[in-house]
Image (cartoon, rainbow, N blue to C red):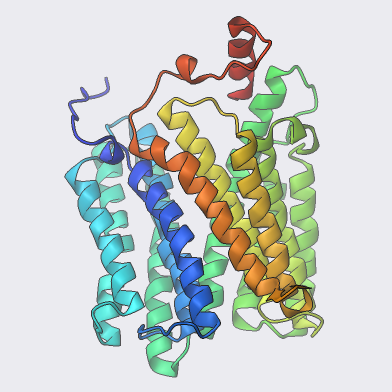
Length: 414
């Protein structure tokens, strides 16, 4: 029997996904304009990290870690049957995350070692809190979820150590991105075909996504190998070879998930498109290793296309599902995802793309910022507000009966 729910505090801290998804959205909205200002020389950075290192670090261990925490604090209660972590523990954890962001940006002018010690606390606390819940719920088989959290923590520490030792974290930047891509291959490889299968089955479609099997394990193994080569030896010809293999396998994996029919469901289609950016990133890595593309290309295909695209889609779906809204993207959220795709293309094009006085980097920063402004505008009030009755939240299109709208909303909710 599930424990009685006695929480009476602010809705924002009633569930782990709420503060951390909102923090990620607001951070994504603010950090890229700040980075663009530094990149263009309009402002200076006080961080102990070099400007490019700070940019990548904050996107991986600032934005990315917040989304991972929100996802895990939503999933763990479902696994354990216990009430979610809420209230003051979430307030304290969010404060630790904010302290890390302020320390890394140079707010208190701390030396490199104190910055490391403050910044690494967040993922360490996340791991400790998740361990407590899993152990208390005796849900031993899900202790394995601590492995990716521990790897992210180690990668963060390694990033700081490399920067302190060598004056830059070139390898650490790629490792951080690679770890988030690994998580998408692992977790996305479960949720994308699962959501697609449910949606297609409710429509009586006979050809359903292939279940997870040995082929998926082979794809993940090849992907991990390609990511390791890219992180360690990005300009070696072997990186090109394993990256092409990984791209081919992950394209085949994606095709097995039956994504084409999901064009009728934009919220579901987003997941497939975001995952497609993983093989695209491997192709970019292969081109870079052969001297046919810029060194930042793979990082931005992976970072903007796959990581930002997938996390945005997951945040949308989780926010709607857990706050009682119908699982319908609507024009605004679908446009936000499209802007992120365009931002990825513009950033890879870089200086080769110019529109008036703006190049691809300027355009990418603008498109990203607009996308996150829309996401924060639409999802922010839902994350901070009370859960609503899903039936009352289901919109009724003009000219349709309420009964028909509810039936369609139920089908879309798969």
